[in-house]
Amino acid sequence: MALRLAELEARKAEARVAGGEKAIERHKSKGRLTARERVEYLLDEGTFQELDMLNRHHATGMGLDDSRPFTDGVVTGYGQIDGRQVCVYSQDFTVFGGALGETHGEKIHKVMDLAMSMGIPMIGLNDGGGARIQEGVAGLNAYGGIFKRNARASGVVPQISVILGPCAGGAVYSPAMTDFVIMVKDSSHMFITGPDVVRAVTGENITLEELGGAMTHATKSGVAGFVFADEKSALDEVRYLLSFLPSNNLEEAPRIMCEDPADRLCTELRDIMPASPNQPYDMKKVIAAVVDDGDFTEVHSNFAAQITCGFARIDGYAVGIVANQPQVLAGVLDIDSSEKAARFVRTCDAFNVPLITFVDVPGFLPGVSEEYEGIIRRGAKLLYAFCEATVPRVSIITRKAYGGAYVVMNSKSIGADFAFAWPSAELAVMGSAGAVEIVHRRELATAEDPEATRRQLVAEYEERYSSPFIAAERGFIDDVIDPAETRAVISRSLNLLRSKREDLPKRKHGNIPL
Image (tube, rainbow, N blue to C red; front, side, top):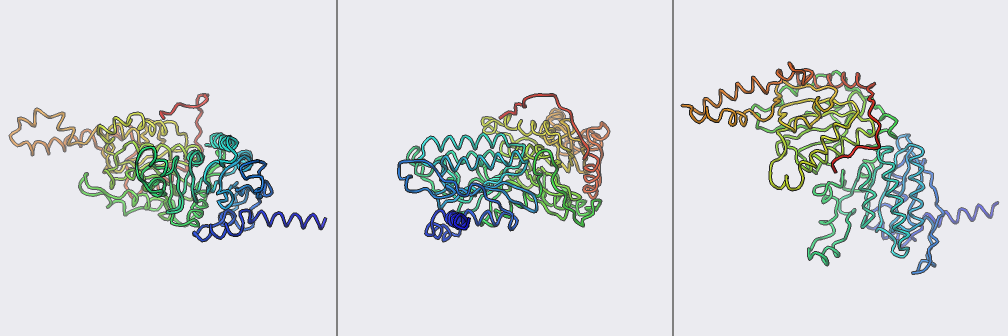
């Protein structure tokens, strides 16, 4: 037994430095943590149980016969985050550059299957150069198994991907299928084809960072939901993000109590609205005033900033917030903002997180390019997402709620459980000035004082058609509220809606307008 124990310890010691001391030193000299250090930092101390530590590949040829390191380039297992069980894999760049072969892929398959069968979150720490060339189609087959499991786990357990190095070729599609992608500035990259291939095929000269860096995916493609300056901050965000999510789709997110009273008045909101309806204000200040301790964590903060999406808590309960941002393009809906919000709405709905919308939307962005690029189809994604959602839904209309964009932003007509409006709200087909120009065109053309006539007609239109009190009379909103009471109203509404249940027709799945 003593000899066997000694052999075991020797093998495990070898596995802990599978890539070799020199490779580990080179890796750490770049300011990066090793695969094991990342796992140990992420999980509660002493909770990690590694699986398949002594696995290694069985491929032959192309130099692989003499290089069979333990772990085969990926650390897998399970542990705890804030006392809750999670599964994790962490690719090891010091072993074959983190490239994925058959055994490497099978280890990830195994831990993903475990996460689904146990109903616990799956966290992937990605740091690899794609499929292992030496293993040919076996590596591609292993990727297919990962993709299939990503799809099966979608909406069942939370899936979070952290990109901590290169992620190229087919490797990018697994993170893209997960719920959240987190990247690190200057050290993580994602792309289908690298700069050299792009240059050879298209003639375009572009740097690695410009093509697939963290800020590129945070601002242009929308692939990255979060970007951080260093690895530890990125891993901290995984822990924080999970606090807003349940372990699986049959549970509720944990309640985290605070000393912020649920019925607290937000008196600062009475003065937040500008005098002119065309002046911007910061919707994030509204959100901060309403949620517990002003704590709001935004998803995709650098992408399509005219709409803000993120997690917060009210009375200790997790909520998802979708809000128009008047400071950016007047809060208008376009292709990117619609898709960004639709994705977030569906994520919240999948994991039983109630949805709160703050509405100040002048409409959909007009323009030839928007029409050609599919604003009809792609804007319909947000409409579909809200119509499909069965979680508790509360809407607060702060100012403009015009046209089809008002309907799309979680109106009662598409299933919001409660809709409330501030006195400053305007609910109409379009803005009063534009409506008057159309409806009273002849009268304005013949008026002795067109400007005075225009002001009078605008005032009459606002009083007769766009006033929130007209919408309240018709039952299109449930009440006009004092802005200071917004937090208390939302809290009371959510307390009632916690027992909400919906019986839907049986179907395989809907057909969202992709």
